[in-house]
Image (cartoon, rainbow, N blue to C red):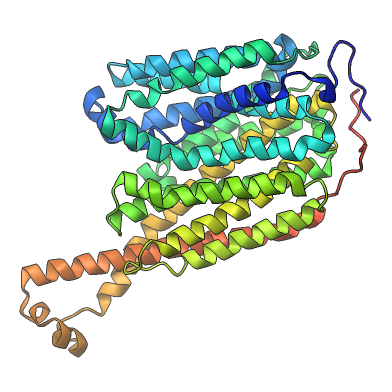
Amino acid sequence: MTAIPAGVAKPDEVPNRGLITLSIMLATIMQVLDTTIANVALPSMQADLGASTDTITWVLTSYIVAAAIMTPMTGWLSDRFGRKRVFLTSVVGFVVSSMLCGISLNLSQMVGFRILQGLFGAAIVPLSQTFLLDINPKEKHGQAMAMWGAGIMVGPIIGPTLGGWLTESFNWRWVFFINLPVGIVAFLGCAAFLPEAVRRLRKFDFFGFAMLSIGVGALQLMLDRGAAIEWFSALEIWIYAFLAATGFWVFVFHIRGAADPFINPRIFRDRNFVTGLLFIFVIGVILLASLALLPPMLSTIFGYPTITTGMVMAPRGMGTMVSMILVGRLVRSVDARYLVVTGLGLTILSLYIMTGFSPQMDDRLIIESGVIQGLGLGLVFVPLSTVAFATLAPEFRADATALFSLVRNIGSSIGISVVSLMLTRNIQINHAELGAGLTPFNPVVSAMIPGAVSGNSTVLTQLNGLVTQQALMISYIDDFKLMMIVTMAAVPLALFLRKPKAAGPAIAME
């Protein structure tokens, strides 16, 4: 068992734990919301900032890449300058850069301020998880992770709805201004109640950080730009792929032999933590890939406005919150593997239901599948977040939570890119296959649609619209099937999780 350093309060002696949790979660939700809240405001930004359809996406890309590169720095920064100071600085920097985004006059300013927003916001999520693990005794880690997970998983769900409402009711600038009151309350609460943590002097492994940054940054750029430039048919994507592969490869071999590596490779000796990284990657794929698919599907096929889309998807978040509240207590008495497998089973069931979607249905199946998927992901996320860190020494937590967040975000980016690529290609294939049989020489077509034989343009336009709608629906179903298969493939990973002992061993520091 790892001893508590002198001068640091034991978890069961931390005062104002409730206020600390509230303040931390306000900051966390504020940061997580910004990963999706700006998406629906892009068309309005494009007009005001004088950007083209291609360049306006840099508002999203710049934030994602900056946050991805900065996230691994969380551990070193918190050890060098103190977790509390880094967290407070991150909150202030995030709020200030959000305000600067809101008053941007052109695209260059917006992209620059979004980079700052990503750099400052990168440490908020991993450090919030670290603080909640620090201030709670081991037997309450499940409840703490339930609270943290609710903010992490519900934030992206309500982000597009909140962003759409702010844009329609006010203007797109309020998507960023909304962070000011939330950030002020979070900062005051954290400044007053967050406990100090012992600092550790660590040399900064610049080479290791540079290689990891090149790998992460190039991978994120490849995933973001791929769809726009036809993936590997463009030289740009090959360059990104080469840089990503080289960066990761050099980083792995560097940390194995470096005296003071940027990330201590001994972290990866913990089986629970490594399994947790694999699981959180899958959750990242499923959660944000689903969120990326559903809003455009509901808008394009069913004709739902933004507000209605948000209302239909809201039960998904409610299911997540309910399951997290329940599992926060169950994780103390039920084997985490059973909870994870049950959660994956519910997620598979929800995706199976989604493969039965059709343009003629009402919103019942969408709501039901959303609630079931929310329940399932909640059952997976909480025990996973608890067990993954159960046998790690507290000294490793900042680095480990940073990796946890980074892998989740990479999984999300890969998931969104893959389902988007499949959707685009399958629409063309399905449209061609469905349209192949709709010829004037087909007696069924000539009998049911007489105008198609005579070449009536109005009838042909309507017929093409129906074919396009069906092709689009089939393509969405194909994506849901892919996610279902990925989830099924993740089930055996639960066998590698170990239930930690009451006073489980921690990895020793050198």
